[in-house]
Image 1 (cartoon, one colour):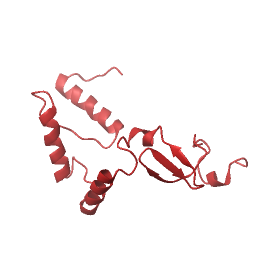
Image 2 (cartoon, rainbow, N blue to C red):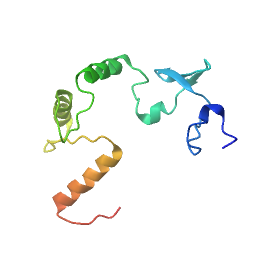
Image 3 (cartoon, rainbow, N blue to C red):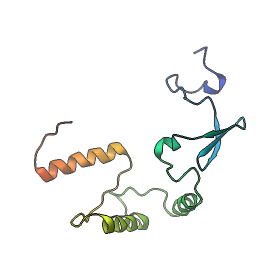
Image 4 (tube, rainbow, N blue to C red):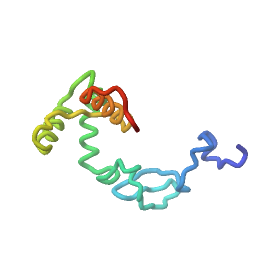
Length: 128
């Protein structure tokens, strides 16, 4: 498209960003643009950085885990942090809820919830 800004030249036309900036880095609740401006991030990474951008404890944990095993799909491998988190979750869940399933995405979580519901109820269909 001829009317595309230069910085969006190689991006699909339907991915027009809301904020007119290119982010250089982020810290806490703030994002910093390549032009030096500072912006309060009300979106917080589409709600996935609820501890703030680059929280030191989160960065440290990610670095340590990435140095060991960056990704271990739960239905293929198991790893310590996953097992530890499952045990901690079971401690705070209501009695009788003693199993935890992790998913990589919302779509995967919903898909598995549907499969579990069908298995438990022994009903083949769903209404969504």
